[in-house]
Image (cartoon, rainbow, N blue to C red; front, side):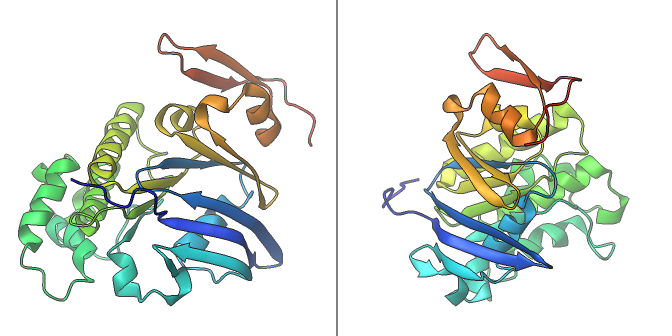
Length: 267
């Protein structure tokens, strides 16, 4: 596919803040370009999920400006927004025992007339390695199978657009490493073929280092760093998590880290 207007950003945040309960989060300032893969890292409670809620428009900014595809994020009609931005949630459950085909098809509900629905559901299922689950009931699936179906739903949602945004909220943490790898590879391939950007909330530092080209650090409710992955060092990661880390470098030159038993003093 052609990716015209590559110099046009998908989303930009300019000093955006938000309140949740008694806490204020932000300011957040960064730009997402077509095709970028960005991971958001930080300790628990740092504000990663709050940032995602802002981008998903579940939270209204207290201040600052969020622009999505050249238009203020707050001005987008929800059906139009859903055609350009999809969310892969942390939980894979749905409220009822729906057929898998219907769960995947829910990604297309914003389209009033969708003659390609059945074809896109099938193709999305194939790309998520979930074609063998079509015809099953969602509530009979294993956790890994549910993850594949939810991924297929997101693929169906953004199937026929270019330069959209995929928000990923740590959806693979409970899955085995092999399945995590295959699902993330499916996401990368799907997004790359369409120029979609990916912003993922992650707890797995190594997954972020190896699969994403840019890392945003969040701590104490605010951004504390925005780095190209090759420039991320062990001291930066140790300061982010207040923990000692050991590191090794693979044959491909990728850094792999693991926590040390000796904890750093709190910053």
